[in-house]
Image (cartoon, rainbow, N blue to C red; front, side):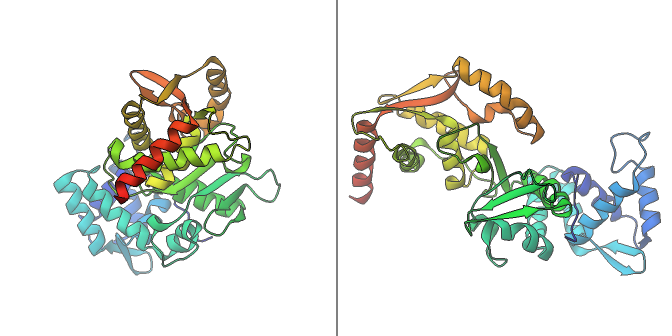
Length: 338
């Protein structure tokens, strides 16, 4: 594994590239000393710039084509870096224009395609957005840190120390910050296998919120799939479905970030409140959330991601009759095909 981009923050990367534009050709040590002097990669002028930190950011600048090597230890700003710096000055460091430039550079990297995109697509030439989810958990094995499950190949992979640093702690958080993928962690469930409770999935760049009408059939299909996993399914039964299970299936289907899907699902619930009931977070769920909180914090996600807000309340489950779901779903299909 030859790509280690851990702890890369987008705002600092952009600021460093902009800083390089005014330096011309320069030696590695000179670049590092000047970056340290101007506190480009730290929050304070009193905080010393670690050599490893600067090295990782230089790797990122090279990998994404923002600088280029022109001799032994010598570097200069590349055209991609000039374009990024100009966009930052014009639109701001956190603008969509700046992120679009970095996203494009990220996805054009052959190393990223080989080591990261291929996990979702099983094909280096296939766009990330067309990929499937992946799941990961700690392996429990001495020689491997993580076990991954790949939907695109219906197979598992095991990551050692080098792959963990490069992918789990490197490209994964960077891709999340870029809005290329998102992550969802769900509690124990009858729908989700224990080794697939943490998923990463591709998301659309700059997605717009869809109306309840637009996602109606998608949610119907997700609910139907969850209910069909119950071997005792009966048309006259009332079902209680966890919001976290719905999000688990709906997020990769829509290719929207988790928080956006939570908003879309909340509006969908209000739109369909004549035939389904939103259940507030129960005591046992709060206890489960407390137990899960340490695991959630470890992966940088808030426990509330498994709930939605409806009329000011946290909602953990949706209750409905199977007969109502089937009839609504069939009626909508008839309208769409009519």
